[in-house]
Structures are given as C-alpha cells and as structure tokens.
Length: 143
Image (cartoon, rainbow, N blue to C red; front, side, top):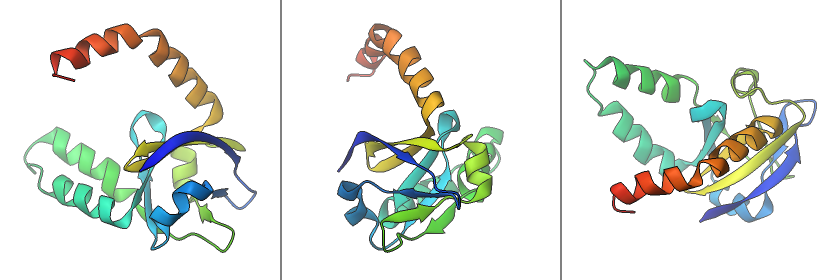
C-alpha cells in the first residue's frame, strides 16, 4: 500500500529518491509514464501489467481510447532503483511534468505520482476548495 506525501529534490542527472517505505514495491523495477494533470505515474511491474492489458483492450476505433493509450504507453519507460533508492526520470517525462528541482512524491495506494512542487500545491488548493462538490459527485457513484 503506497500512501503519503513526501518532498524530494531532483539531482542534476534527473534522479529522485523513492521514499524508503515505497522501495519494497519497486525492488523488481518500476514503470514511469505520463500521468494525468501533468504529473508522472510510477507503477510496480505487476500493477503496470494489469493497467497495460486494460489499455490495449480498449476499442481501437474510438479516438479517446487511442489518445489515452498513446499518452500512457508511448511515454512509459522501465526504471530501476539504484543502490541509494533513486530512479532516473527521463528528460521527456521531466519536461512533460514540468519537474524542476523540488518535487512531491505522493502515494496513491497502487501507484506513486511525481509532481512539480508548485503544481502540486496549486492542485491541492484547487481540489481542497472543491471538496464538498467532489464528495457530492462521489456520493452519486455510491462512494
């Protein structure tokens, strides 16, 4: 279970430390890809395989399905933890998420999200101010 919010720095080579409590999940490697809201998603290998199978099963004839598959699959890359528990974020993904020096690593139960610290703070502020409306919509879904 991946939970929590941590601030870390990208080093000059584009590496970021994975929080110690998340490392076990990524011992056999991980997949980093473009996420939604201009963050990055980091999946363990098994979670990635489940998601990738669902994505490739989407209807090819639907433009939205093709666009989502391209977003998630074309940017995906294998990463491995180094001896210090860091992963290297490729330039293309750092550019997509506008990652600078300080980043936020958030545990989202089955995945990790990697955010530029300013983008994360703006997103949190916006979401927190709409919490009641969001909760009402989720109530309509039975949550």
